[in-house]
Length: 254
Image 1 (cartoon, rainbow, N blue to C red):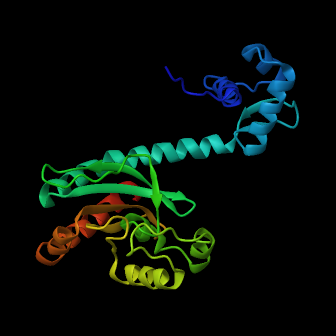
Image 2 (image 1 turned 60 degrees about the vertical axis):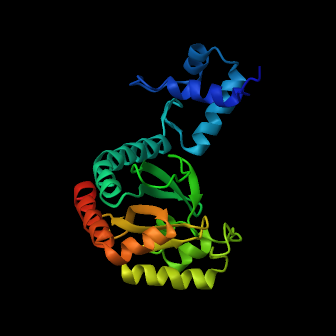
């Protein structure tokens, strides 16, 4: 029976970080060694790395350690993502039930990618193979382009410095046409993925803005290309999505 390979150094780093879970006071290296029963040089190497990365911080006066700012930023992101899912989910259910398509919410994951936070499928929607917590490209997804459109040209240049991967023959693989598309997205207030990640599959996406005017995340409705095209033309899909985005902006970002 195959076993999953475990990385010992990561397990030891996690062990050290978990010492601070219920710890009010700082810990010295000697205390960390005693509590973890690690070799002193091993513990020092891991603690030094965690400190350099910002997961621990050292008090220069007594040389003891406490949790660093990177932990705080991760916990803040986790709380924020949980709030987004909790508040947004009923709206995703409404869209899925009303328009009988698959609905997502997604955030910017950095490095020109997005992470899907939540997904709701209707009984009659086609099956879309997306998994929560999994990354996808920004340049060929509706939610990705929706978030990318509100970044500066400099930010886009930095994020898209690598070759743009072609998922289908409709995928943008050159920057200039993509930048033109991003300009149109800003002007009309929504993004489209038209057979760009999978032939026969399209989606429409709208941003949910933070108080600073930048998108915090995006929501999308996905389905077969003929159905999405028809619903954009014959229903109030886009208007309802924009109205929901405004409501979510007020509820989540105030």
